[in-house]
Image 1 (tube, rainbow, N blue to C red):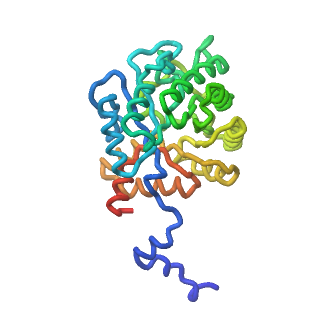
Image 2: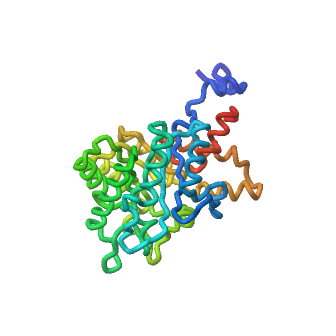
Image 3: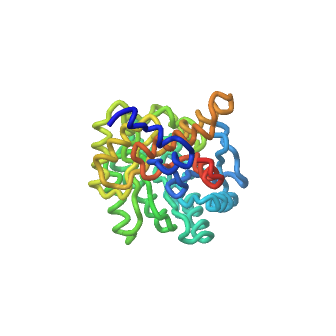
Length: 328
């Protein structure tokens, strides 16, 4: 059958029909909101390079999470900013560190009504800004794994639902699974930063988390954005090592990787709509070059359409407010 008998515009004639036939639907329950918890401050501070995003104190954290819950957002990914940094990133695995205390505060306030996901890495905690221990100017993989294990255990002890190792070290998922199981945290989930690419789109995050490397770059451990086969190998390794959730990061320039991953692997798939993807929309909309709401909806829809089951995004509150107002 073809035109004139076949007319696909029939499906698009009016808004109620368009909504009926939507193949992809966005909802706050599928969003994970990243939050920065800063040990150095008493009140929240806006992040200049990420308008509308804040470094939160423990005092302001509870209100922020409560405001998100009212919008239907129940899942959060936490990054910590400590008062003190050293070569070993020791505050990352301090049982009384900023993230460990934040988890305890949130668990006491909200019980099991929220999903607490924690970033397991060292870059925010090391004086040199790299994601592990440096030996002879190079990040040492295996000794760094020992520190990631310590971080994950303290997060689980504090009450995290899911730990997310983001250092892109070989064997990091296996190391965390074994450490958690050895300490009777069999139910703690692991979300692998399975295909985390060395990307320019992380710059605002590094400003927000004060985590830029003091020398060199992270290309010896984060993977090249030129290699899709390597991305699939990394994801497959995380699955073999025991990941419960796999992730592609960033999202917007990596929709092909998200799609390939969804078609090849049968695990829950997260995509991280990262800081640079957020900030460029905010900047362009401020200059009047595009409609911010339309851009948010289109970008998040494209990520979901590519195959992501859940989206980690700084746009979570914006989208949730649109859902409440029935603006999608």
